[in-house]
Image 1: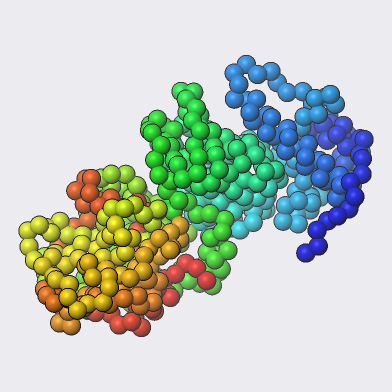
Image 2: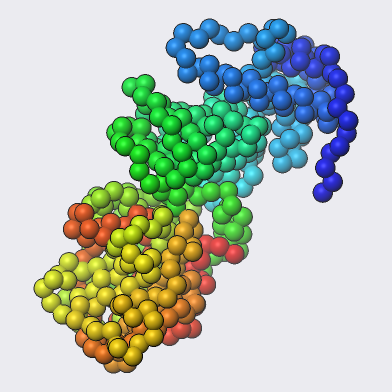
Length: 495
């Protein structure tokens, strides 16, 4: 694509036209002249965008100062509110064209356009997002781009309203924003405070009760709580606005970001959701099935964890974030299984140098054969069977029944993990995204024992998991390599 190198030309009337449009006093002739200028002249578009961006940054900073006087749109101030940027949709957002300029006073101006809409059942309607209009996203995921170039991914369930192109009110839900220099000053307002961008990439999560966390992936954000406390939050830091908590590690996988959206869109369009459900139904008919959880059951056991959207629009996943978050289950009624396959879709945050439990039985300390399926401090997947002993002749890693690959290569995406235990062959085989990774050999391999257990945290402080689990399968037989591959290929949300 060839860059636009049209020489810049002066536009002495552009600023006055833009200001009159923003103030709502432009005549139809004024609007027609402005539209014609922007549609035909790249230099005019650049000048208009520069005026808009400067005004947006100044307005957002000024609005945080108590008692700041209302802005003026006279030619001396040269300040234009972000709402006026709706005209830019004619030329700057996804090739959209705005017709019917004569209706600009009758309808709220559009401030963003839908780039991708995955399973949201047309929540936005005509594909453009208007200022002051409240939106409810019950299912699915949206990717929007504002007139200032801010890319926003919104995951259901969510409720939001654009107060302007540079100011988003988020009443509930999770969003991730990638802000270019042109969008500096973009602000997310929540029931617990607000986050003011300083040129960055960040996420904001608002729970059902209004509790708010801000996570900065890169750059810097200024947060302000309802009580007026301000903080500078930088890359790989997060803060709670509602609880005034100290900074903590960012939960990057808690947010779907723009780079992931094309593959999710392609997978959904290709029918992966239906293939996944067909595979689950087939597994539930397998005579060796011990448990299949897709977390969509209305009678899901209660516990200290959050229920969020899973891999598919409208589906559910268990989300673990805080110390003590877990989901209690009873799998296998204490029976012993010489052969065992465990498989799950997980979405892990940055992995700590400590154990994180995917699934474990509660009676580990009381008997041989109990199972702990965990992420080790080495970032490997470990299937620990109480009483088993690694073979002295086993290839590396020799420390335990661990995978060779690590989970941090696939952070911030859905990852399929599987482990196959065979006490007769005295082996544990590991798989990532349906592909064989490593086989651990054991000198002692008792049958596995399942029963009362948990997903997530083990004892309230230990083996704290940070991330989501969506779909867990336990079979009392050793699945073949081909079956593991088929399980992944049917269940992946990507294509």
